[in-house]
Image 1 (cartoon, rainbow, N blue to C red):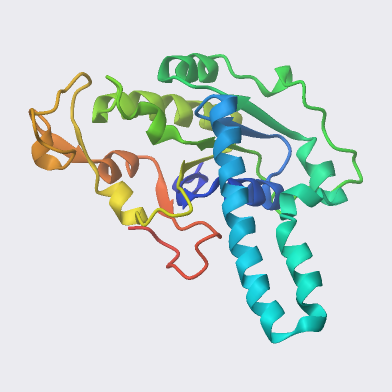
Image 2 (image 1 turned 180 degrees about the horizontal axis):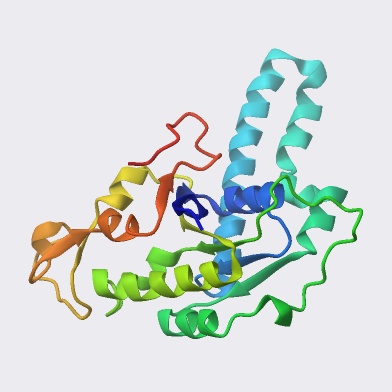
Length: 248
């Protein structure tokens, strides 16, 4: 399996993640949400509300310029695409496996025994083309966030988890992708994620009074990007249409 089969995408909003999977997920696709179900649903709701509010404000500007189309535009803007449930979206989502895993220990245990044959998600009908892609994939959303602020937030901890992901993807001949969440009002760039410093060994502590930059840790540190690029290729997601295709 080529290195291109392991992708680390730029951070995405929950709604952007779901749009990407609905448009590019081949059966069998497994989405691993690295948080609780309640936490993810809450972030998705906040995301949808934020986008709807933005679109509604834009529609009001249109209303001022055109009284005839204004009210119709505002009604359409207030209805987010995920609330409209088009038939294609509903049909595709029925064949996507979604699991919620809130801790690093649970993630490693789940991946070690993962089997597509045990999935309760049925395959699509033979005449149903659910994706433009042919390769099944496993997508982890919030992989780094799951490790952050735990004893596994280190090069050693990330490598242990990543090796489990890579080994499983090799065994299944699947594509593996990691996407970190971002908030709508966040200004953090993909490069900031890759340049964040972590200690080499698990259990490394922070020096009192210092932040999370290189000087904030006891002992040697390394950038997250250097750990990830051992297996993963960096790419901007389709939600970053104005960015370059390579994150390095």
